[in-house]
Amino acid sequence: MPPKAPKGEYIETDTGNKISRRSLIHGTQHIILGGKTVIQADAVIRGDLYRSSSSSTSTSTSSDPAGGGGGGGGSAPNSPSVAITIGRYSYISRQAILRPPSRLHRGVYSFYPLKIGDHVFVGERAVVEAATVGNHVHIGKDAVVGSMAILKDFVCVLDGAVVPGAWWCRVGVLSGVRRRGLWVRLGRGGLARERYRLVGR
Amino acid sequence: MDPRRQHHPSQPPPPLQQTSTTTSTHLKPPSHHPQQRTPPSPSQPHHHRTPITAHPSATISESLLIQGSHPISIGASTIIHPRARIYSYEGPVIIGNGCIISEKSVIGSAPTTSTSTTSTSTSSGIASRDEGSILPIRISNSVIIGPGAQILPGAHIHSASCVEARAVIGRRAVVGSHCRVCAGVEIADGDGVADWMVVWGGGNRRRRRAVGRVEPSKVVFPAGAGGGGNGIGGNGLEGRVIEEARLMVLQRERDALVRLIGGRRR
Image 1 (cartoon, each protein chain N blue to C red):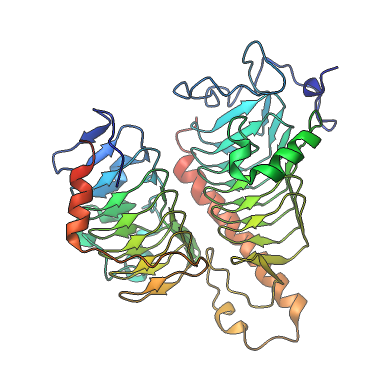
Image 2 (cartoon, rainbow over the protein chains, first blue to last red):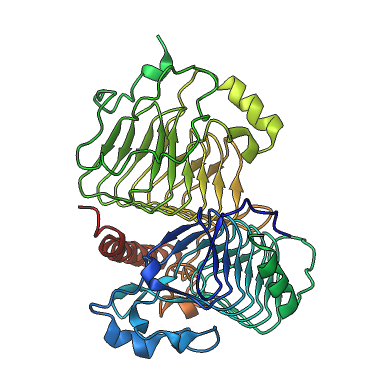
């Protein structure tokens, strides 16, 4: 599926993440990659929008709406400052935008961590502002996932679909709000591993 | 007289080679972009700096890409996220106070990709009609431009409107105040959206903003969740109260963003 990249485009980390040199990642110290994750060129990942630890740590623990689901939520030693968590074998296509959601809660406006599970595919030019994206979620290209949305496991967002903010998609739902796209048959882990292997070779 | 040398009447003509001193170090166009994006119609022999007037309280990310020959002005306490792009090839760009321009949004049209965004027949026809005329982009106060949104030349967005992610505002389109253009919606060239309207969905469905509408991507008001069903009678008042509350939250959002992305500015 991805075209063969020129040699040396991807940096491979110790845990097997393949990150394009042309990806636009901000705030790397606030991003946790679970390993074997692919980030393609021109993908914007906003790790700099983390929850500021100054006045919101006391309220944040009780109010975290993204407590369940998601991959590797508790893996962070310093969890208050983690902005984006991405699980294993996830794939961020080119020009996708991942930004943490934000909201006002008890008078404090703060950003909340964006948790993305394992085997998640994010299509080209998609905008993901969700609070939690579960495992095996497929987000099509040009899709928009609104702020504080929660996508449970095996949710498939069709190409060009819009998931409104604060929306809650159940397990296995196909969400195609506004486009008559193809109903994508979701592959299991084998597809994600295949995608991972093909990148950067 | 080349019309591209004209400045917007509301501004004193700034010197062409000079940018604002507070932001000049951050506003250099990145060097990794290819140099083949010269405008098609007036052949510019050398690439001179875009004249920029930015208010000192504006927070502008250093990875903002600015190109073009017309002046760009950015108002007070406006926040521009990284990787936004502003092109002023076809006219000046005026951004008001307290706006939030999200990442990867495009204001203006790049010279090379201007025809690829819309259907080629209409855009080329309009482009040929607009040849030589100046199309200013005006973004009023407290406007939110979502990630990946596109504002084409000549668009005018009135105050307190919200253009969500990946929406497209066409050429010469006018978006009224307190509007909401939802994610992925494309406002056609020359189209107009009245005040207090919501445009959403595949067929650009529209409706007036009602009382107690829950703002999806911003906040969930405690009263707004149940307000959709009951207070149909007192429309104007409660809607305005909620809108005022939304603008206060927007102020909080700006404060939070200044702490996060504005810290390394100085």
